[in-house]
Amino acid sequence: MATWTEQNFGSFKMRFRPYSLTMRHTFTVASYSRNSTPVILLELEYDEIIGYGEASMPPYLGESQESVSRFLSRIDLSAFNSPFQTEEILKYIDSLSPKDTAAKAAVDIALHDIIGKIINQPLYAIWGLNPRKIPSTSFTIGIDKENKIIQKVKEAKDFKILKVKLGLETDRMMVETIRKVTDTPLCADINQGWKDKHEALDMIFWLKEQDVQFIEQPMPKENIDEMAWLTEKSPLPTIADEACQRINDIADLKGVYSGINIKLMKCTGMREAKKMVDVAKALGMKVMLGCMTETSCAISAAAQLAPLADWVDLDGSLLISNDIYEGMKIVNGKCKLSDRPGIGISKI
Ligand code: MG
Image (cartoon, rainbow, N blue to C red; front, side, top):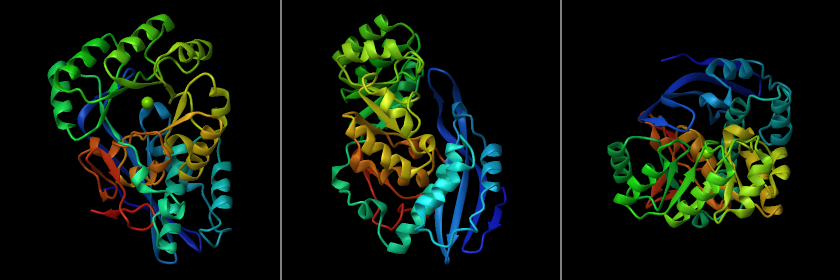
């Protein structure tokens, strides 16, 4: 096991180490395939209270264990003496570089965990959110061969909505295969895989007949005019994922997509994610709450915001076989938040 890198800032101590998440199944989307995901586990300590954080780095984000470690090593919290200086601390962290959003999220999550533990309440309660308002979470079926798809759909029988990854020549086969074994509603994530707007629209009409509820990132994020055309004509809501990373991206996406997919690793963490929900709703846009492949640490942090979402896709910790925390559970296809304080996790 990799050893911790430790830093002592006076009021705060911080330590972090690399960890590799093992996927239960090879995970394939329109642009790549993988069997593991690199993460960095982080612990922030204040007054003997430990807050847990995590950075997850799927390859397309452009971060790695090395870049996250490098970023975290640059942090100096000696100017701060209370975790309640949240805005100032996180503004300082964000100012250290233009990107490194997953590395920033690791600190943000740990800081929120400490705050909840001091107040002795879960974050969702501190924010006044009702956990009974959480919509069903989707379970992701990656691109695969017919027999594997059937096996995965059977494993996901408790879920009330399934997310199917599309964007290759096999799209109709994927959906038809799923429909042979279940009539559970679906949502479709194309991961920018469709290149022609007319073909995309035909496909969306066909998917609607297959009880697909919404379409995530159908075309490349640069195709703004085509995307606005598609959203206007689409019988299903369209959601920006790759096209929407941070809060400043949202305003330009109004009229281009029906909604946005917010993920902690894209947007620097819980503080900005919560602000993004407010901005999207003020613009009349839908909110989806998503994740990367993550342990129960980052998943349970994101789940604190789930009562605010129209759609929830927080299955990342179920896709791995070596989680080291327990926290949010999925019961009857819904996120069940733990009533422990902070982000509500403990080490297994
Ligand atoms: Mg997506």
